[in-house]
Amino acid sequence: MTDIPVLTSERLTLRGADARDVDALAQFYASDRSAFVGGPLTRDLAWRQLATEIGHWTLKGFGRWIVTETATGATIGMVGLWAPEGWPEPEIGWDLFDGFEGKGYATEAAQTARAYAYDILGWSTAISLVAPGNEGSARVALRLGARLSGEFTHAKLGHLHIYRHPAPDELVNGGAEAYA
Image 1: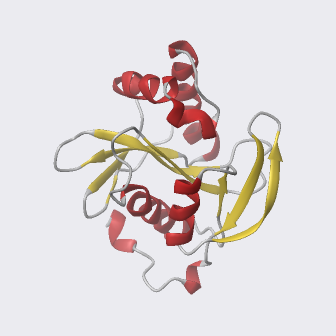
Image 2: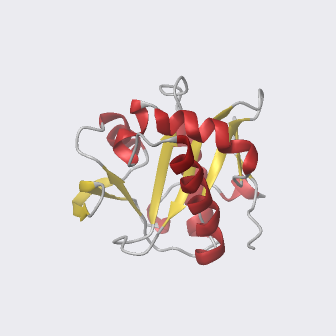
């Protein structure tokens, strides 16, 4: 089992997923908010998705974190690094749970994850895949400095837009303080 690092930003804590997250993930995947990421799903399939998220860390040595508000402990989503079999390139992805959009959380957590990918894992590039019509995620990608650079068709998720993130040397603040 890979030790999953805990990362922090100004307002957020990114930690490894575990059994306490089943209810929050099941609620997210039961909602229409999950439509752009393979949902809605039944509770048992949401549990399997959580197992996939945890297993990704073991298979790849990186993955997505559960994101919580540091001040309240509220679970607000999943953000992080993703590169399963068949993916075009390593990705930075984000899923915010209902009620937490519009606060800059996805951008803040994704910046923290990207800093980890670049500074600790040594990635030289990253993408984010955004489904057509998912304007919120497209705005987050643009706020992160990513630019539309291509398309990818996934067997289950269908047509996706590829947003390419700036390379590490193009960023003004790499954010190494996120995991100091």
